[in-house]
Length: 144
Image (cartoon, rainbow, N blue to C red; front, side, top):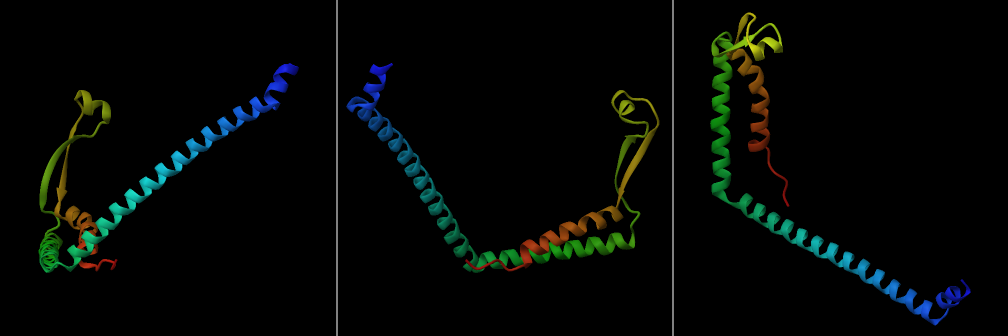
């Protein structure tokens, strides 16, 4: 035991400890450089994306196309909303279903119940889609 203690506390131990610390420091520096390279790569990608978005936002054809798409979708939704508000019971699709639970739905039997999706359902569900279209096409984007 005293030989091991004197070996580790002497010049050989100091040399070994220095080598271990140097290896650890090299490993840590490698990790730091790798993270810095990844960060620089991501920053370059984000800068390229921001430049392309700026170029697209200045493009007149892109602005015109977005406005046309916005107005066509808005006009279509307004027509559909008015039409189905006047005639809310207009059936769009009728689907067969089972009213006796999941066991009869899988294995059959029970009484069959028809489920009808009407124009009123489209008006209620379409409002959310309408606000998404307005938010995407009509609201101005942030300037970069």
